[in-house]
Length: 250
Length: 250
Image 1 (cartoon, chains in turn blue, brown):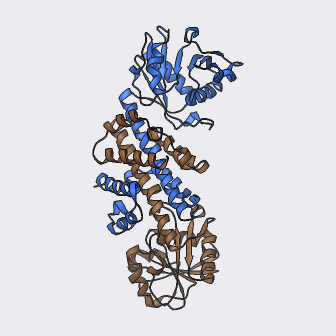
Image 2 (image 1 turned 180 degrees about the horizontal axis):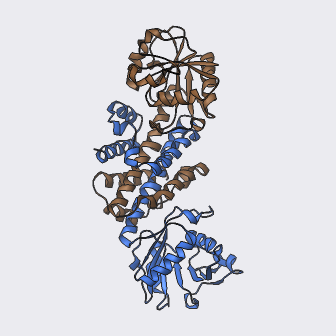
Image 3 (image 1 turned 45 degrees about the vertical axis):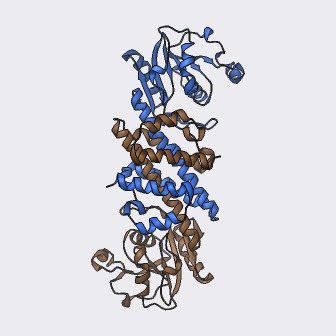
């Protein structure tokens, strides 16, 4: 049995509580939040608190508050010789401040409040300063996911950057696609199969091999025609991504 | 029974031949290609030819050759009062030149030679100059796909542009993600679930609502940190997409 305390009940915290609850060999010993009203719903199942001085004993304390508060919050914890981890993709393990053992437990997924997540397929990136702590985090992650990775702070920062490209930026391209459809009385749904195929294809072949379109074919006539249909930032975007495709595939 | 002749046996042509072959109410009456050797494999099943003057009678002649050759090739066809269509996403219906009825039969998908395609889910965009021809194309498309759309030449050009954003450009972002992983000894597979979720999410909510990340949160600290990790065109790309996200979501 691994005993965990969840510190913060936002998106990540509430998703972790849900998946830990379903896992018999994980015991949530306490849920902390700075506002007690937001965790009242957990009162019947767990100890809840808004005072870090009343934290009970746990194998792992998981901080799920926002990135920029990790440093000051962790410094306020009266924990010694305990394992305390954060769940941030961007912050270094040493963002944690205190007389405790430090670690990271980072689920790599776009987490939306209210939308259920199948943790089984979500990669969990762990980091610790010693093998014993790493083992605890590995065991904990392994209980909820089949994809657990040792990732150091530098790698995690890079992974987060890659995530911005493949998730945030990609979603923005979808938005541009929808806007173009809307402006021309076309249902956005008409692009769904293309979008799904684009995402599925790279499971089988590398994106470099999967690249198609006017940019990689250096079809300057089509490129010019398409640029002429755009204006402002989106026109610049078309030009720059085209340039980037050509540079990356020389 | 709808009788079709396929003119050109490249990617689109060979995929159409395969799906038409499986459809009992469609009869392929002839396959044309300028080089006969490339269509020898069809000889046992269909009439094949490399001479447009030997084309036999069909309800629809489907030109699947490359975009830039549609005009001159169609002008060489000795067909009168017949329905001749092209399969291009970018070309106007009037790119076709001749004394025949004109139309378009455009399957909206990224088609890779050799990779099997489930046409049932692929949107087919049709266009014709009269209702009788439109009905023939609608019936033909409907036999192989459950997603048939009347799309005029201007709309199709816009759809193709949208496709470049959601398919070609998106795939390039995946390539950047893979490059970042590779450079930091991370398996690209670690990003698969995030990529799949990004593509799946927009089936349920609009991209505008699905947008997350530092750009839309205007988290200038993270934005600056991530820009600093990049250089050259990719740094410019990060900056410009961030700007585009902020402009599009004011």
